[in-house]
Amino acid sequence: MTKIFDELWYGNIEPCAECKTATKEMQELEHYIERHKKQLAESMTDEQKVIFEKFEDCLNELNEIVERRIFSYAFKMGSRIAIGTLDD
Image (cartoon, rainbow, N blue to C red; front, side, top):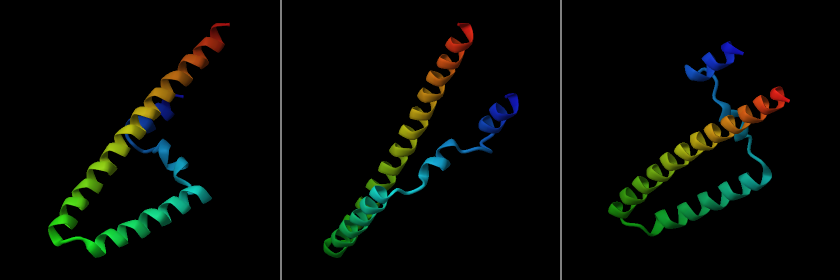
């Protein structure tokens, strides 16, 4: 068990990597996003494109933070469940 904690700590395991397998629903949404981005890009000025790129970067960073927080919360909850089960 200690080895798995070490692997997580040193970043050798990325728990969210297993969750990134695209479902049909996700692929459909990605298609819509790309289509809308393309339509927007065609009508934007160069300055607006730079602003939109920064917006996307911030949104991606926010999503990564949320993923880490969800993982942390779920890990703690799973640990509590496991400890509760062992206590009984």
